Length: 297
Ligand SMILES: Cc1ncc(C[n+]2csc(CCOP(=O)(O)OP(=O)(O)O)c2C)c(N)n1
Ligand code: SF4
Ligand SMILES: [Mg+2]
Image (cartoon, rainbow, N blue to C red; front, top):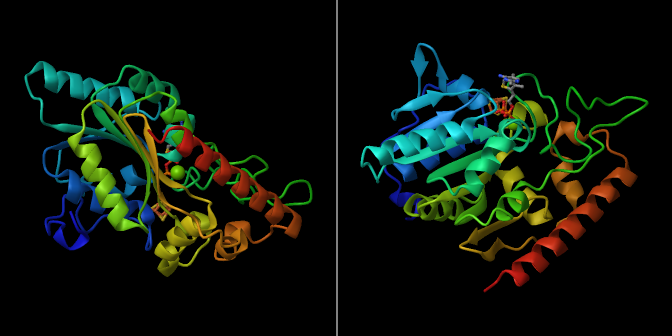
């Protein structure tokens, strides 16, 4: 499906309360146009819950379940199994959670569901911190980023660890489909969600979703940041389909400083720290490329 062919009907409607420029809101609005009416959504505490479903207001026009922070994946698997027991083979069950709820707190439930190849789609929208509770660091927060739990002072200057590689963790489960996507590369995003919708078994998509509030970035630069994340190599667009890995867009290797300078969360970084991140990007990209070559057939 091409972008202009997306249906007009909104299944995640206007009137939600996300901040201006929120990448997560763009992601959910568009993915629902692709997944369609025959979808059940399972969602834990996160920004999406707050801006999309704060009683009595609900933006979702499909069945929506709020579950605990730790168990999004297994709750979605339960809904899916229940539907299949009733002879319903068609409804797509989607668990969707933030990076905190996926890479940290929900990872055991997620891993179990992947290993059992539950028939469901799991979406991790990655805004790289626990935003809803006031910008705390997660395993998915990048090196150097300021958050309220990785403050900038005399002793420390932002996060001292590097971003957790969730796609690699999920690919190691050998599930039918693992992909990364970005709201700044919408045609690639559409293709991946369409593909995931049609498949059976466990599917995982991690979506890059800038957060102007937590990243201290201009609300008008969300899409520009997405493009820069891919061009610098900070975000790899790739997918593993039945064991075969494809890189969807190669980075231009634009210096990471071009990406960092648009975000207040990196403002304090020294030249040495920027170089450290640049080296990490170079190694990560080389590893991703080697991995894709190894899994190319
Ligand atoms: C077990 C448990 N611990 C902590 C919380 C509090 N809590 C609710 S949402 C949230 C942050 C969610 O972060 P993330 O999953 O990254 O989603 P985001 O808010 O960034 O969209 C936290 C810590 C909770 N609801 N349950
Ligand atoms: S804090 Fe960030 S992720 Fe949450 S609604 Fe605002 S822009 Fe979106
Ligand atoms: Mg988050």
